[in-house]
Length: 206
Image (cartoon, rainbow, N blue to C red; front, side):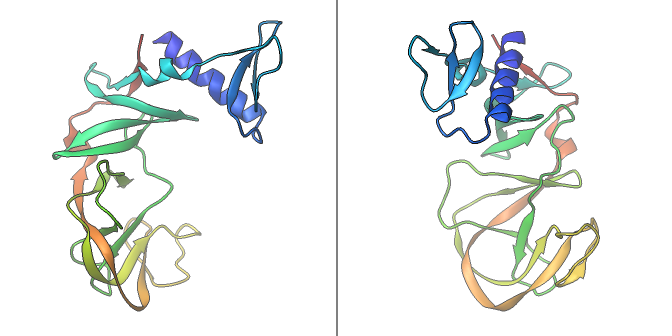
């Protein structure tokens, strides 16, 4: 487990030190330090840290498997998670399943009531859930055309809706500016607490 954490921390530290690097190649210098470059210099060797990360899993406080790690970011990881028969890529951190920075649901109604929908142009093998207020919303089924009457989104300024009306939970219900039909799938709502995991989460690996 320590090697997984060290690998993730080293990768993140290198990215922060060289945010404009395009290659994302980790190089071992002659002095034994690590550097992020487009390509390694002569007499430097490429260091592949990611197999360690890819073999990691996330477990909860009881040791139960949450899912294998897909990738890591600053303070969070994404894991493969099976919920209600659907395979998802979910964001997790030490606290469990945090509220995401992005949230958007569409509705056929003009007031954000009824079945919530997630726009999907094509059927996906793996869905991406959204979490808000302890509820996970994830896509299911095959996309079909739906008329869109409104959208429930996070406001640009907390507690303030420049368009539409403020809803419980600090979200904004924005009416569609014009009639629109687009492919979407139903969003299934599942309380995070019903998934059966106990915080804090941790990364575990070889």
